[in-house]
Image 1 (tube, rainbow, N blue to C red):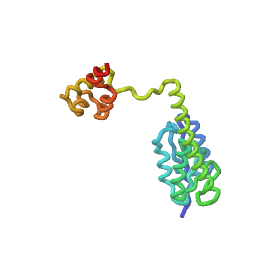
Image 2: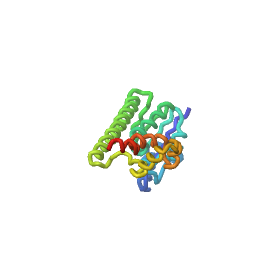
Image 3: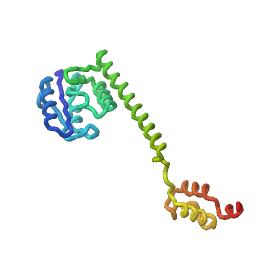
Image 4: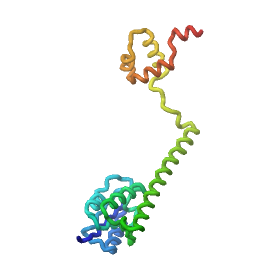
Amino acid sequence: MTKTRVGYARCSTDKQDLAAQRTALLALDVAEDRIYTDHGLTGTNRERPGLAQALAAVREGDTLVVPKLDRLARSVPDARAIADELEKRGVKLALGASVHDPTDPMGKMFFNILATFAEFEADLIRMRTKEGMAIARAKGRLKGKKPKLSDRRQAELRRMYDTGDYSISDLAELFDVSRPTVYRVLQRTPSADASSAAV
């Protein structure tokens, strides 16, 4: 079975960068007709037709060649997902001149390092999100959801409910809210009779 080297290059806007990557891939023994590219796509763009074609082109024993890891993936978890696919299919990954074979000990170590970094990056994002929310809360930016009904409309809903002429479903439809919202308003808003008794 002939083993093939399939190349992939990506750049967001600079055509010169894509030309440089193509030159690098040719120098790494990738044939011109085996180079797939994505141009004008940012790293956060999930639709990468060139990458999809490159992944479809590789077979067991082949090598996917990219100039650098950041050209292959949007993030470490993304790189890990691609590496997992290559590993399952028995495809080697070459980053520049360094070839990582998932079947040998060094290759396995590289793929495991990617997994560790992916988990670390995900944990960092979660931590930053929590910290950001805590800071925003401290500054009064996060005050919870605004009530769906104004105080006046909540009082009107309570008054209509107390007449006995309207069901919970009727009130939900009239005020364009859910049934649970109606129940919450009724719990929060005392009836007129209860308010009079309290005076």
